[in-house]
Length: 80
Image (cartoon, rainbow, N blue to C red; front, side, top):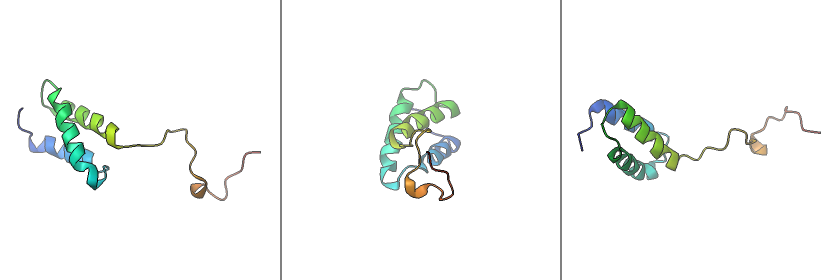
């Protein structure tokens, strides 16, 4: 496997920032596995590998999910 340039390593480090510190090692391993599937090593392939790895580690709520009651504004109208 070709060596990562500093630019590519920085892309991976930036993508790892929202991952919990305890899970970053597994995130880096997932990126490594994803990069093995890529034909060429470049900015696009590294970003794709990071996006695939992030999907395994980030659990965002669906966009249409309502916030928990404690996070709603007290000034928000209640449904009738």
